Length: 224
Ligand SMILES: *Cc1c(COP(=O)(O)O)cnc(C)c1O
Image 1 (spheres, helix red, strand yellow):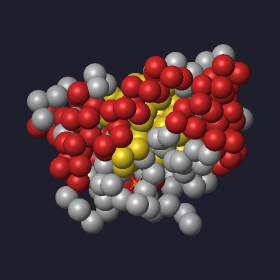
Image 2 (spheres, protein in one colour):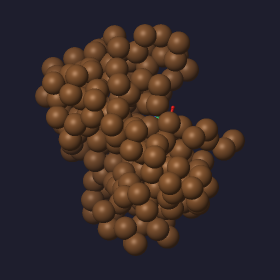
Image 3 (cartoon, helix red, strand yellow):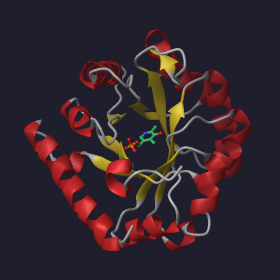
Image 4 (cartoon, helix red, strand yellow):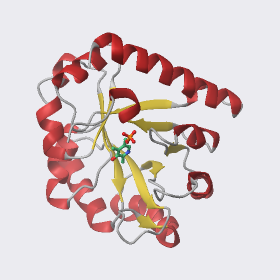
C-alpha cells in the first residue's frame, strides 16, 4: 500500500472517530487510535510511520519483535501494545518490548508479568481483558470474576490496572457488550476502555471507548 493510500484512509478514519466522539458529546482527543499492524509487511508499516502513526497493536510477541525491535530506537515516541493472548513463558519477552499489555486475564499471568516487570525494572501499562460475551473459546476473565480479579491484580501482585479491554461476540449487536465493559470499569474506578475494531469502533466510541483498535480499515485486508 502506498503512502498516499494509507494517508487517505487515515484521514477518513480520523474524521469518523472525531465525528463519533462529537456525537457522543466527547472530545475527539479522548479517543486514541491503535493501528493494528499484525501480519503487515514492511511497506505499510513504513507508510504508517511516515504518516505519523506511533501507536501500534500486535497480537504475537515474536512477530512483534521481528517487526519492531530494530525500528523502536528510531522512534522514541513509539507505543507498542500487545492485544493478543500472552503465554506466561513469554511474559519476560513481552515486557521487554511492549509498552502496554491489554490481555491480562488470569492470576498466573499477573504473577509472570509482575516478575518480568521486576526483571526489566518497568511495568507495562496493563489492561484486563474481559470475556464480555462469556464465550468459551475466547480469552478474558469472566464478567463474574472481573471485579475480584481486578482487585487481586493490585493487591496480590502489586500491579496497577489502567484499563479494560474486550472483543465482543462476532455476530451480535456490540453496543450492549461495550456498555457492560464500561460498567465494570466504572464500578472499579478504571478510566481507560480499549474496545472497538474496524467494524464497530463508532459504536464503541458512543459507549465510552478511549482506545479503538483498527487494522483492516486502515491497512486494507490483512495478508494471510
Ligand atoms: C486483529 C485485531 C484487531 C483489528 O481488527 P480489524 O477488524 O482488522 O480492525 C483489533 N483487536 C484485536 C484484539 C485484534 O486481534
